[in-house]
Length: 224
Image (cartoon, rainbow, N blue to C red; front, side, top):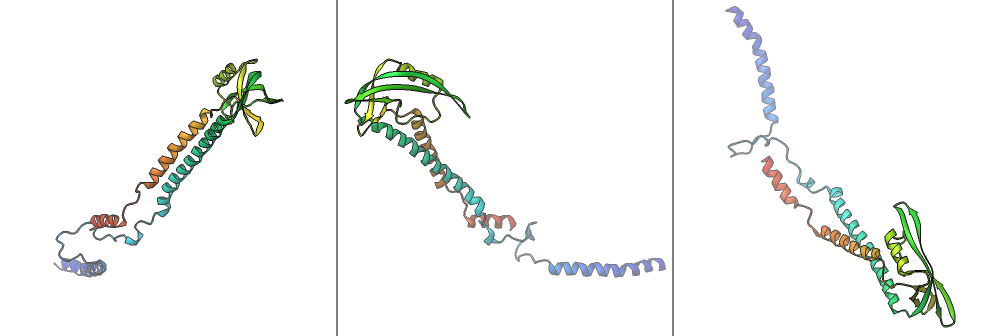
């Protein structure tokens, strides 16, 4: 009996210590709202500051900058294609003369994309008493040449010794072309540029940001 009383006397200070620690914890813990029958497990978590909602501006500006870049690239590409087509059509008002093909051959060109070919056609025509030597097919020619089949088709169309029509600039008779149409690459650039510009503009006009009030309400429902 005395043994048990001694054990109880030893445990009594420990019990008082734990009770004091529990009372201090209850004092620091915020009290739950009145009238609430059930306490959510997340009710004790600190709520986010509403002022911090909608502050991810670097991420929000990334997509608009990308869409604006696509729009600008499309505008530049379409403008270059339209300029080539306009320049080619301007030669439709030029006078024409008869010309004889002096030479016609296909030359190979090497670039980073592989082998390309260029039709090299030289012709001679006369304006008044002046004889002029020309070599241009059209006002706008591809910089990197043609596919082999296209180059050989030009040579077949203008063989050596053939008599053809040549169109020349009346203000500068040394400027002449055999064809008045623009290359296919000009039309391709025009259509591709229009598609890119339209796509970029539509993406810029789409709504991308949620209302901060909606985000705050969603956070309140989760934590409350």
